[in-house]
Image (cartoon, rainbow, N blue to C red):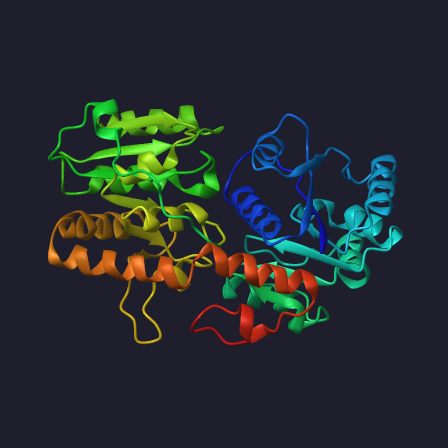
Length: 375
């Protein structure tokens, strides 16, 4: 199979990690992979570093028919069997270009809860151009189908994110930050923007019982200054470490005892799975794929603590329980469960294989559905 993966991203996050994992994995399976992306951005740099071909021919904004024609001409020259799209806002022109170029299979990947917008360009794109949709959570799938009942349910495929266990043997985070050996470390990671809920994490951390605990936050974004001010107002600034964007997130997570996902809106958060793989106890808000990743089902115990969104007191209470469980029998049982899930449900090989089936048009709902969900 010859595949073009199209990304419009300027940043490096969970969706981009997924694309690179899939692109590299499919190339290792013998498929030819070309990545269409912005020049000078992390996707281009990391795709090249992974040995993938890169092109900067890509669709543009709503009024940019010139770039759409250029993308179509590139596709016509490359003659891919399938195109995997990840930029929802580009679905119209990208899909249009694919059809003009005669691409047999066009697949969109949607990694966050989203309705089909009531705008003609999206309605046309998902009626005439997009053949299949990949989502990473049954919650996302069900919401999509409620908003787009005309889109074939048999072509909305749940493909769980894959996560690679850290290669490091130990973390240097405590030494780097001067954190005492006996202090509990709570971690959060992601872009510092309102939907990620770091204000809630600060509120919960300030209310937690362990006054010796430290909070490390890896990431940058437009809310950083406001969040720093909020930490100062809560009188926890001296116990909060702002790490900025980190290339060594594995090192950060391996150095933490508890990871908190405080998001207000999210898909199956890749960083939560990375924290599970790194051996963190996990507290997360009850959004999208969190219950699929952490909740009790199929006879298995809960793997983490799930709290309502936008509920700082509930998050603080769960954080207290997680900190208290650290190093004890209750924590050990949770960590055993998270390891089992990482190995059996979120293995990279499963993600790559399931995505390959969708791209080739051979996937069935029961193949790509997550354990415990309905097809």
